[in-house]
Length: 488
Image (cartoon, rainbow, N blue to C red; front, side, top):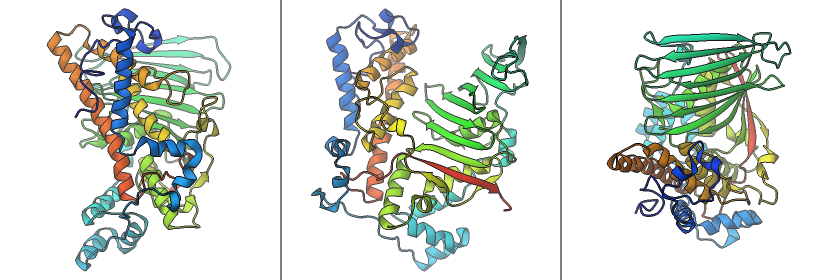
């Protein structure tokens, strides 16, 4: 059964969104074009209900279990006496034969094998072998980093550039505006503008086009310098089939802030990235590319800070570590997570640094995030999955969608409207057959991502023996790792 019924939400590029839809939901698309033939409000509501049912159908955890935690009984749900169905604990240590241990120890060392078995769960030796290989890999080397040049044109590109001077002399005022257009061999145009202050510092950047992405892809970059001097860069990658995802990175001259990363419908790896003869992990590359634009180097990078850690696999693994290592701090245990041993380590290695063990932890994270809307319940574990689903629609359609816990609107309705508008835009001018095929491509991309979100939840609970009504104890905290030279 498809995740979304072809007769309800998907399958028609002109699915009605109703006559009362706000104009901003459809971007620059005229309201009558967005709504197609102006189907009645009742059909719009039916589409929203179908979306709601589809999203819930891909969640392997009963909504009632999430509701319990949402209403302040998480402590009871996490108690063995909660009266819920017992879940077999698959977390018993994996036993290796002498031959298996010798094979792995020859590759990674006895200490690495012992730590992996003591601090993680593996269904079999193959799973252990895959994870060890993953954790030992350097995704992007310093040599790779030196070759990343997001705005370097190709040899057959034509450059059109202009510089406009302004009167501003204050540090935050624009003293010059540099506009660059790159005309590619096939006639396509990529554009970039840079605003600088009187000291020549970049205070704003806007770019859109084929800047440091594989053939057929587009990158959108927006960077600004705050009053505190911190540069914040938001980057979106858009693929040829509509794949889309966003990372937000900031740099204050010493600390790289990993603010947000939403892979959404992007593939796990990208092939054809300029300067790479091999496929490269998508989010790692987006981070490396951001570091180049932000000016991060081995000489100035002293810390890596993750704001509001909400990576679900890490949170479930950390919860298992806390259950099995009572008395140990989050700072001690987070080092044993795959997230710390791979992504954080690899981020430091991008510029030739490495992370020091024992990060600083801010347990409260962002209090503003926990209660973003007046009167809304405190955001919890169930919110993370629903927000991941919402963001999938947002990044695919590139339209505004009501927040999950915003009492002024229904996010499922908003997502249905955004999807309908996006399909109308994508199918405009196509023949009926082409429009049907494009609509099906969009459906397939969306359904695959929603299925992956649900499968992730189910797989994590199974791997770490987390009962249906248990939720991780920590879901929103900041982590700061010091970086040191490799020889230190």
